[in-house]
Length: 398
Image 1 (tube, one colour):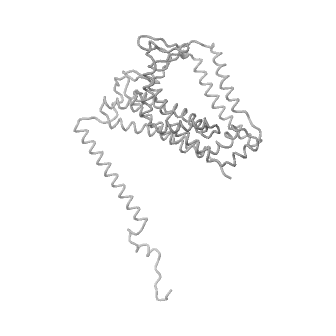
Image 2 (cartoon, one colour; image 1 turned 90 degrees about the horizontal axis):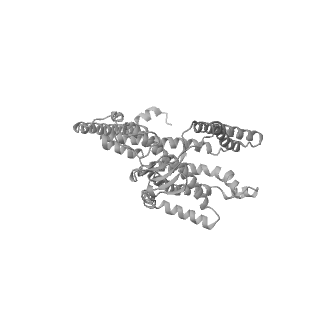
């Protein structure tokens, strides 16, 4: 450096750079502009909506939830009548959505996993049947499948007076599958609580057995003990309460059956359509996850004498799950969101009940907001659980 040159401070050089050429300052300006634009748009939409509502004399707020609903709901997991409030009606719709989503996710996972494994079978016929199922179900829109199954249930089965009676206390007609259930008794409540406690204890016992095996190398039959206790202890409680055997048998009264429990055609068609459609995608996810495992590991497992079932359970699936779980979570979310198509076949899910509420009260904004919040809760809950499970199943590298 020339002795006559004056050294320039780095701070002076940074301050001499125009702000539009400074990436950090530009980013800050763009973020402020984005916030102002979003805030201005939100204020405009809010003020415009309020003005239109006032001009049309439409009340806002959620006070309508305490008013009488004045409409019936075909099926409900809890007691409900037209004299109940809109809030209870929406609760009924929420529970109906949870019912079909929960059962659907379980059946979809089982069926999709089975078909995905079948597609990799060395048996030519099984592999081709699994592949044909996947291609067929993936390429038929789910709404069309719902219409198809709904028509099958209504057109293929007789009226209640000519209902099929394959077994005592079981009837099949165009009103659904009606079958007998045990009459309410305190014994069944005790059995349910005992079964739940056994499962919780069995979970802790399994964790203890796993740690014991890691330390000592000795396996502990936690699963078999839990299964035996889950069967024997509730039966023992049932015997202590007098072994009740009374059944609530359905009977034809008028134009429909009374008593027992009914699985409606709407619920059956919705569940069947969602499960068959989504399981085709789950099967491909399972197939891809299994094929992601190196062939050498499978051959090594067979070389040490493991049977095919043991290879799948002990070697393949534990590693394949880290590939399967993330896309499987997306399919579970899709099934829950696709359940909103229930309105097309008359199943009283949350969207259907909310639409009826909106038509009667005119509270469209509040109704749509409730739909968004409820399905956001369903999706986030599913995602949180699956992300937790994904972390539990992740392989720990050393």
